[in-house]
Image (tube, rainbow over all chains, first blue to last red; front, side, top):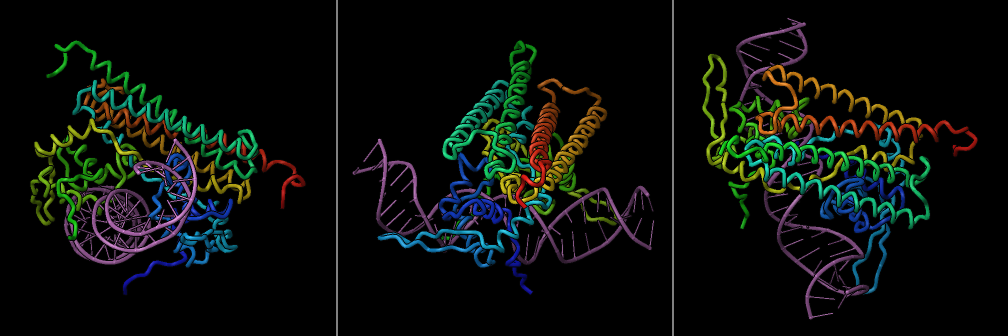
Length: 204
Length: 204
DNA sequence: AAATCCATGTAATTAGTTACATGATTCG
DNA sequence: CGAATCATGTAACTAATTACATGGATTT
């Protein structure tokens, strides 16, 4: 009675890879570039060690296939593509309700337990987070400009353009970081306001 | 050479539980209420099946301890509390850089692959997401009001108040959802603009 | 009477991370 | 000549989800 996983069931990561393959054929290595910085902020985070086995599963399920590209003195390169079956499944899936994202941010924990620490030092941590968010915005915006150049378009693209989804996700990624920065700035101000209070009025 | 995990190493979930116990002693069941809706948006998502083993690990590591409360006709209830060692560890940890949150939202994938679907139907999905975010905002705001009543305070609390971290996280949770709603509204508008275009101008 | 809450756990499986392993090419 | 990039994989482990299991008390 050892349960075996339904080989037709596709994980979120599987769909992420299929989303990319729907646009164009790619190798596992190329796919892995989308799941790590700076592109990971737009789609799905994953390491390459998760991607290769997932591609094997998708292949077994008949949702993707690959052609081996032989190369002199090197291991074969596998170029994956969506099968018609894979495209059909992906197209259905796109309109289904996404599963809710579990909320797990260490920063929230540290803010929750903030009262244990010195406010001035906590403010420093928050300032650093804001700076990181800003540099991520810069990276993402630079990536957007690269795309505009490469495809000879200007953002925003029409909503039925191939790259519209990517643009929408860039917009989201930047917007959510701006919101984070605003929050950090408010938080830093609050923390500094108690940190700056005369020492006699604060507990040792 | 089978590697065994360092019993002193604490997972993020472990710190989440310690954060809660730093405020007051609680049972495993009570802790689990914080890690699922509606409170999960403020701290850390987890199921109870993850919490009970984690409490056992923290106990073994000497970071928390419990006193069994005997109850007639019922299984003992365990009330956990932070040990001095646990409090020290938590206090150090609060000021350390949080690990980056991996980005994994199915919605982003569906938006990426949006061009495969009918824009009018995609717009519906997006509208639904915005509505969900709004009802989450309402739940979180209601939770905030409950806290104000229960502790006889008015938000915002002073930055050195016990509940300041909770308030800050409520603010973040609401702000990020507002930002999501704005994005959804923009996105819906864009999708409808191509959906409403005369049929002759769109591909079948 | 049924559903939900209180309360605590374990088992099985899937998902994700970190480390190990290999080897050519290209760039500075 | 050393580092980064291209390229593909496996092994070991940690984290998270889903399902199984139990049972009294309270609410509808």
